[in-house]
Image 1 (cartoon, one colour):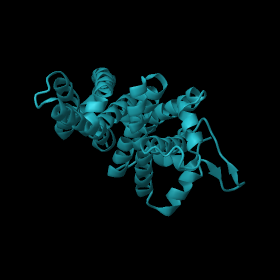
Image 2 (cartoon, rainbow, N blue to C red):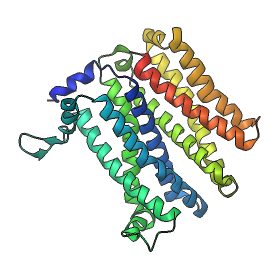
Image 3 (cartoon, rainbow, N blue to C red):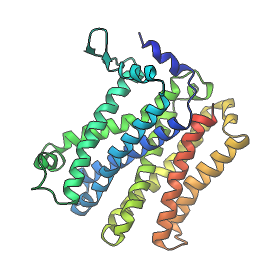
Image 4 (tube, rainbow, N blue to C red):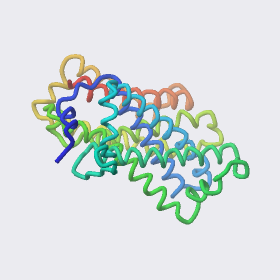
Length: 306
C-alpha cells in the first residue's frame, strides 16, 4: 500500500521549481558519474582533473533540495515528505520498495551524503590540505584506496538511479503523455550526463593547457552521448503515438525542435567538428548550448506537457 500523500503525484501541477530541481539534479548526476569514472579508470592526469566533477555534485544537490522546499511551500506538505523515510506514529524508519517516492528519497539521501564526502575530498586535493584537515586521510582512502571501487561504485549507481528517478516520477502520474511511454527515465539520465559533462568542460577551460587531453576525452564521450540522446528523443516521440502532437505543435514544437534538438544537440555537435569561433570559444558556446538544451527539455517535459 502506498502513501496517502502520493496521490498528489498522480495529477501534479508542477512549475518552474521542479524544472530547476530536475535540471540541477541531472548536472549533479553527470558530474559525479564522470568524476568517479575518471578516478576508477582514468590516467593519473585524468584522475587529477576529474576531481572537478565533485565540486558540482554536492552544491547541485543542495540547490535541488531548495527547489523542492520551494515547491512544497506548505509546511505540512514539506513535513510529510520526510515521512517517506520516517514514520512518526512509531518513531521508526520507513523503507518501501514498492513506493517510488520512498525509494527515491532514500537514494537521494544516500547520494547527498556521498557527494558531500566527495566534495570534501575534492577540497583536500585541490588545496593540498592532506595534513591540515581532520579526516583528510579517510577522504583520500575512500577515493584512492583499495576499496575505492566499492565506494565509487555505490556513488555511480546511486547517481544513475537519481538520473532516472526524476523521469520515473513523471511516468507514474496520470498525465497521458508522461504515462504513455517508459523512455522518459532513460531520456533524463542521458540528458543529465550530457549536461554534467558540459558543466565540467566549461569549468576546466580555465586550465585548458593543462587539461587539454582530459577535455578532449570529455568532448568525445559527450559526442557519443548526444548522438544517443538524439536517437532516444526520436524513439520517444514515436512511442508517444498521437500524444506526440503535444510536443510537436505550437510553442512546444519551437522549443523541442529549435531549443532542444537544433540548439541543444545538433549545433553543439557541429561546433565540435567545426570550431568556427576558435577552439576555446567554440567549446564555451557548445557547452553553454548543451546546458540550455537540457534546461529547455525539462521545461517541456514538466511545464510544456501540462
